[in-house]
Structures are given as structure tokens and as C-alpha cells.
Image (cartoon, rainbow, N blue to C red; front, side):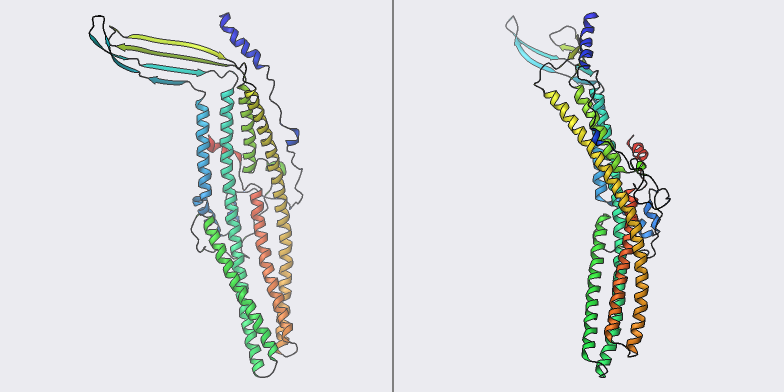
Length: 462
């Protein structure tokens, strides 16, 4: 027994030679800011189906269709199945390996009496081997595979969140383009009326043909605005159709851009964000996987204890009775000289772990910035929309006055034309500002994690 314990004692002594796992660089640590730079007051929790807060059933239906039919989500699901298979493979390495075989032999020999002798033999055998994994090489490899599975599932949820946000933003942009087309068509009708009046006044000699040519030029300028708006609507419909997993085609409409609900501001501090975004959880689990892979690579430098055994029976027509066979043995294998291969593999694993640590820090800093940018966008786009609404009201009143003065003969057509141009620009700018405000809310919900939580992904990964 004392001799059998010597290899184990030597293995334990060698385990202390490699030292503790090297720590990650201190520069990779993540320190969340105490508060957001832009504060919008108290908020409310985010629901997982946050897009319903905009109050448009057609938007909800489009997001649901995208989540069901998107090829991007299909690819992400296939990557999860691959990671799950890799995790099962790593887990299987911890169990004994049992194989069975049935060697068969058949031959003809010459006996001592000079006669031919046909011989047939079989040796069924069962072999088993087991690695005791003294220093956790296989256990750490399995933990790394498990963390990688969780990271892959988080990547799927990141794609899902981005897809929902992309569909919502695309729908808002489509409704803004619809409103822009409506404004252009209304302006074209007004320019047609102005052109009719200018032609009648020129035909009666009341004004010069300069006024008529100006009216014609403005009418044709508005015509090209209508054509450009229709082209933009078609392109946006086609892009949104492909995004939701369908062929290019028309998109059903719901509420107009000015009737879409402005949702509540989501709550949460920067420290909370670290557990509320799937991409941050993905980076965290990638770091965990890198740590466990480093532990596994370091454990490979230590001795391994294995147990092997076999049992079988020899069958032959040359034997009167079958003969049972068995063997059992153990081995302790330790690397003596490999020219630094195992050490180099461990150093490479440590470098990959450091890369994962810095990647996690970069992802966290990007998340903090995205939330602050979105909060600022919600505030400033709202202020811009309010200012443009006041400008539009003033321009509409100015056009009314200029039109009355022109019809009464108190002012030239140029005054009315300037008022028309001012109103058109104000209406187009207001439509863009309304769309920007809504897309800022969407970006904020996406930046805040869209109601995601790590508990859900861990539950699906069990």
C-alpha cells in the first residue's frame, strides 16, 4: 500500500508547483458610474414585450412575425444546438468509457500427423477506462463548455432584442415616410390650386407671365417630392418585409406617426444594467469560459490517474472449454519533458482570458454610452418636436394671411410662395422630429435590455 501511495503523493506535490491561477488585468475591471448623465425622472420596469407600449396592434403583429420567421434567429438557434452538443461532449468525458469487441480468427494448419486442421477462434471482450480527473482538467473543460452554452443563448437573445428594435424602428420610419408623402400630396394639391389661379390671372392680363412660371416651377418641384416620397415608402416596405422574414411586399399599417404612444421611461441605474442586457451576460459568460479553459490547460500540466480493465473469454475449437480472461490496472502519467508545449498552451489560454476580460469591459462601457445617448435623444428630440410644432403653427397662420393678401391684391405671389415653402419645410421637419423621438424611445428600450433577465436564459439552459 505504501508503494501504491507514492505516485499519488508525487502528484500532489507537483500540483503545488504550478501556483495559483494568474489574475485578470486590473485595467479590465468594470466600475459603473453612480448615475446616468441625462436623468429623465422616475421610470417604470420594462416588459419583455415592450413594443406593445406604443399602442399599435400592427406593430405588435410585425414584431411577432419577425420573431417567428427571421432567418437570423434561426441561425442563432442552430448555434445554440451546437453549443449544447459541445457541452454534452465535455460532460461525457467525466464518465467511464466502455467498449466491446469480438475478434474472430479462422485458419488451417498442419497437425503433427501431417493432416490438415481447421481452427476457429473467438474472443469476446469488454474494455473499460476511467480518468479520475484528480486536478479538475475535465471538470473545468465541462464548466467552460457550460459557460459557452450560456453565452451562445445570450447571443441569441441579443439578436432577438436587436430584431424587435429593428422592426419597431423600421415601422416608425415607414409611418414617418407615409406622413411625409401625405404632406407632399397635400402641398401638391395646394400648388395645383395656386397654379390654376396664377394661370387665370395671367390669361386675363391681371399679372405677368413671370408669376405663372413661378407657380409652374413650384408645382413641378412638389411633384418630384411626391415621387421621391413614394420611392422611399416602397424601399422601406421592402426592407421591412425582408427583416421580418418575408419577400418584398406591402406592409399593413396601423396608427399614424402622431398617434403612436410615447411609452414610459424605463428605470434602472448603471449598476443594474450589468445584469439586464443579454450582450453583457454573453461577454460575462465568455469570460467565465475563458477562466475555466485556463484552469483546464493548467491542470493538463499535472499528473493524471487512470484506471483500465478488460474482461473476456477465449473460444476455439482447439480448446475443450472456454477460457476466461481479465486484466485490471492503473497508471499515473506525468509530463516530464515536452519542450514547453503544455506551458505554452496554458499561457495562450491566459492571454485569451485577458482578451475576454477586456472585451467584457468594452461591452459594458458601450452599454453605458448607449443608454446615456438614448436618454439624451429622448429629451432633446422631444424638445425639438415641441419647437417645430410651434413653428408649423406659425407658418400655417402666415400662409393663411399671405394667401388672403394675395387674393385681395395687396401682395405679390412671391410672398405667398415664401409662406408655402416655410410651411412645407416646417411640416417635413416636424414629421422627422416625431420619428426621431419615437426611435429614440426604441433605442432606449433596447439599450436598457428590453426586459431581459439572466434568470430566463439560465432556466432555458438547464
